[in-house]
Image (tube, rainbow, N blue to C red; front, top):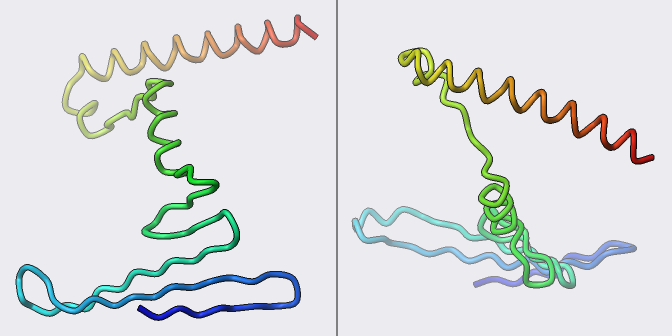
Length: 108
């Protein structure tokens, strides 16, 4: 593991780089992990952690709570019933968003 400290006139960053050789398949592919820290912010393994709160975990929880649906155009093209339900959902969502916008304007 190599630790590097980078500094410029205003910021200082710690960069940790580790290289692991080998793997379960014994092909000895080279793998690299890079970790960048700046105070209470850590960037590592494709995630940003701020004050010990993962941005990826936050996004997952938001998607779950909002029950966000991800349309599947390939399936919708094969299944007419799914396409119709998707269209009904999108139309209802549009109407609800318009109503919410109206309520927000009336509240002001």
